Length: 256
Image (cartoon, rainbow, N blue to C red; front, top):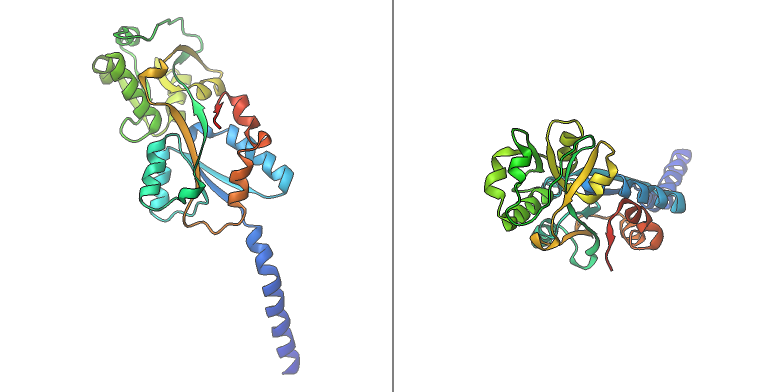
């Protein structure tokens, strides 16, 4: 009986000693906009190499990820491709207000398959519909996906939305829209400049004027439900030169 009591005491003591270490070793879970794939992966690898901590990243449309967080999905950090979905999280008290930083910027471009001979200048009343012809224009889902919302805003400002909207091929996220063009299933696509740079099977044929849409800004923030001590440290790392190097290589604008 005495031996059993000693074992129980030892197990309890070890549990008290080890449990903080186990908590600290918990992976940082990030829910990130699809357009961050590649560059954020590289930043996470740099973090792991330097600090020996692991990061797990789930990529999808910002809208889908925020809805998952709202439904209780376990995430430590939310990285959005627009300000609207971060504001949604703040309004719903799903994101810690004091943790939010606007880290990155991007540009909106028109892409075509890399072997396309198409040329077009995007300005007021541009004949994009004529260039598309019987083909399709790949875009992110226009009501929820940030890239799709930017596309609608820009096409409206240029006065060509009505002519091209019937040709839309909408996708769950911007990388899915990019894939449609890369596979030749869409004649053109509206994506971010960094997406185009990451896919050798497409080429940029035009850039949408900056004043035709709201600035493309990526805010990052900690979720209100996170209890991971390493999450804030990883978010801080993403603001350092080492943490931002991969984003700069990918073509993102680094915001101060």
